[in-house]
Image 1 (cartoon, rainbow, N blue to C red):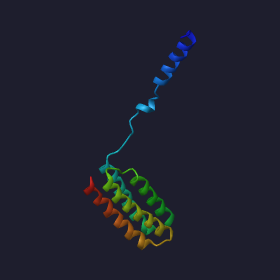
Image 2: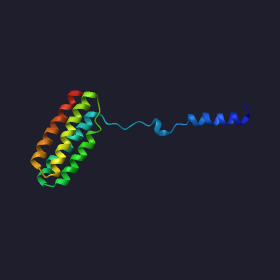
Image 3: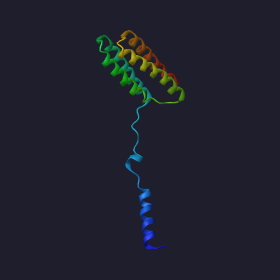
Image 4: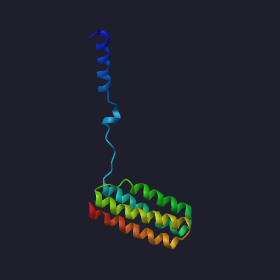
Length: 122
């Protein structure tokens, strides 16, 4: 081997060994009960906003709930049941956009019960 090939091999070796800090960084992950408490608080906030009659605000709150719910992950059955509840959230959001506040309130109450039942699947 020539000196040039050894030098290139040496450089390649260290280039392949270099890992970025993000490779070793831990993901900041909350535990499921904490997220469920946050989701429950946001559902209550959305239920409290219904009497105001602002459909845009309620739809935005429901969207925030959906984003929080997407962080929930435990096992297959848990995620299957979570997805059912998220579909109800979507329905509640559609009803809120149509200014059907009675339907929105009913769906949000069922969503709250659905999230409470998710603890059975942990």
